[in-house]
Each structure stands twice: as structure tokens, then as C-alpha cells.
Length: 324
Image (spheres, rainbow, N blue to C red):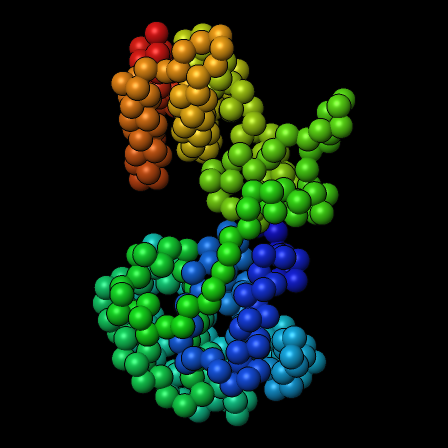
């Protein structure tokens, strides 16, 4: 994913300044929850907040960037900053126990000790319980920052002990404008218009991943999948890219199919002069088909191999049977 800095992500400007204001006035908590997806830069905001806490010459607008602490952070080797990330699919109890032990030691730079837990929703039950005591009694000058993509998956006993940073997600229009500022939007058509590239946000995972996708051939591949699904579902036969989709591409292809089915139902439910809306029973069945597609996407993460062409044809035939 492209290495954007926090000042290049406008939707993080307000929460970052709010955190700086609170810390500058001495009003911050010892434990913070950033319910901001990594795809929106949540981990980058957590690191900027840690820099705010550790900076030795903090300004009203954030870390100075010049003190010894800031220079150590920039070099990636500040001895009083600890970053915990999932080990595989989980954050394990041994990781948290080691962290809690380190946080009892004296700060090497004479200031605060800061721990960032990235993807905190992946704390397993034992790890979450091991963290509770430190959240309740962190010790002097210890600050914990939990970044999560889905706070609903965290234990209530964890979230209740943290100060949640208010955050408003950018709209699709905001993201479109940001991508335009990065000069990443496709060239305009003959009428001077560009299509809305944010249609695939849920497939790629967020604006930072979409920017990366637009910078490579990945976005064009997703667009091709969308066009070929539309043609295949109309004719009943796989076409073009779906005839040669690889095992590495199949999850992307099915995610695009899910979006297409959802859009199909939305469009079909609107009454138009030239046709009747889709029968509610058929709508329900198409929605159910979309659910089956999503379940398959999750299953494919652990399947050793799959006949991609047969799988795609299966969904095309199922759709045709429902709608004809």
C-alpha cells in the first residue's frame, strides 16, 4: 500500500488536531481507542498520536519533528514506543504479557512510554484479559493506543476503559476528490467526464488501497471483471476474463459479482416507464445468491485449490435460473 503521510490524508486532519489539543492541554487519557480502519490510515494516526505524546517540544499543532524523540521516531527506533501487531490472525496472550512487562520498565528517554496495538479487534480472549489490568492500572506516564477496524469485535471491558477518538469517515465524494488531487483518476471521456472509481471500495478495502489499485493494473482488472460479469449474466455464458480467471484473482472476481448483484437488485426495484420492478421473491433470491457468493469468498481463503471457471459458470447459471 502506498506510504502516504498523515498530512496527505485530509479526513485524519480533524481527529489528529483534536488529539493534539487534548494532549497539549493535559486532558488526555492513559488509554485511547481509535475506531478507524487501517484502510483509512488508522494505524498512521495512531503513530502520529504516539509522536504527539513522546515529542519533547510539542507545539499547538503537533509534534515538532526536530527533538531527539521525534528524530528517533522518524528513524523507527524509539526505545519507549512499542507496537503490537497480529501474529498471524490473532494477537496472542504472550505478546500482551511481554508488552505489559516492558511497560513497567523506566522510560529510556525520561518521558512517557507508549504502546500501539494495531488491529486490536484481533486480540484473542486470553490476550484481551491480560491487557485489562494494564488498562486499569497502566502506571505513571504509560499511554496505550488501540487501533481497531471493527470496535464491535472488542470486549466491552476493553472499550469502556478507553477514551474513543471521534472520527467521521470520508464520503465517496470526498475520496473521489482526494484521488483527483493525487492525480490518480482515469482520463476523462470525450464529454470530459470520469466514471466513479469508488464503486469498488469494499473490494479493495478502502481509499489507500484504491489509490494503490489505480496506480497499478489492479483497478483495470476489477473493471474488466465487472463488464464481463454483466455480459455473462445476460448471455448465460462466461466471457473474456472470466474464462481465464486465476486462483489468485477469484476472490476479487467474486467480490465484484457480489457488488453487481447488489446493484442489480437496487436498480430492479425502481419502477420505470418501460418495465416493471423485479418481483420481490426474485429480489430475495438474488440477494440470497449474493450471500452465497460472499460465503464462498470467505471459504476460498482456506481452500487449497478451486476450479475457477466452473465456479463462475455455476453462479451465472444460478442467476439465469432466478431471473428468467
